[in-house]
Image (cartoon, rainbow, N blue to C red):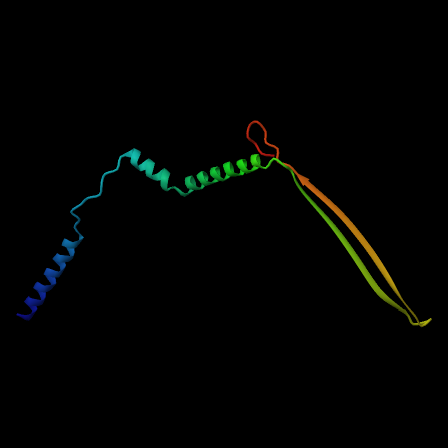
Length: 118
C-alpha cells in the first residue's frame, strides 16, 4: 500500500513537470525580411563598421574645422662639468661641455575635393 502511494505521488509530480514545460504562447513566426533585418541590427561586424564610419566623419569634420596649421617648437640645453685629477703633477682642474639643440615642427591637414584627408 505504501508503495502505491509513493508511485502515485511520483506520477503526479512528473505530470506537473511536463505540464509546466508546455508553452501556451508560441513565438511569433518570422519572415525572411524580419530575419535579415534582425541580423543586420544585431551583427557585431555591421555595428563596428557603422561606428568606424561615424568616427571617420567626425575626424573629417575636425580636420575641416582645423584651418590653421599646428606648430611645435623645442629648445634643449645641456651643461656638463667634470673634475680631473693629475696624480703625476698633483694638479686638479675642471672641464666643462655645453650643447644646445633647437627643433621646429609644423603640420597642416589638406583636404582634397574627394574628401580624402592627407
